[in-house]
Image (cartoon, rainbow, N blue to C red; front, top):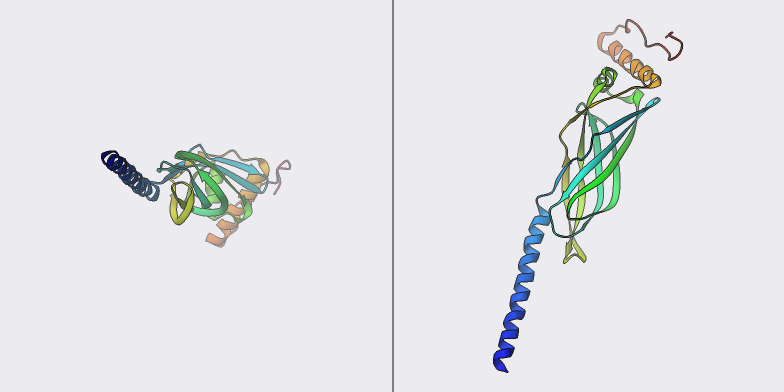
Length: 198
């Protein structure tokens, strides 16, 4: 009887030690090894005097358990120029890769000069920066600590098809940029769509 109890105690202690070791290893991977990237080709959709940018972000969860992101805050850059930001609260991130859809709508007339010029030429690079606040869980049940995971994707070059209204708006921005840069008005203001006249 005494030997059986000793064996049971030994097994119990081994299970406890193994559980603690697994928890420590899982905690280590939960705190490190996170990565973010663009999962799909960005969509840049001209909408009259606005431009909507749709992105799919891949957030890699290196742990063996699902965790919750209290929020994902992101800012979007076109040709390395800030154009807008957004926020997504309360996302559950399963182990491995997670696709998170992001979007922002920007006023074409408020675009930086370099971005307006790049869009007018039909090509622009898209990148995302920001962070996610992740709640670490004890044994997958109790939240005990928040960590901040940075978001910093590689630039993605994207071709853009412009509608007539967006072309006109971008033309106004680039003409104003030219005026500010040189002190002289553009040689020709962009025509109003459908009329051929400025």
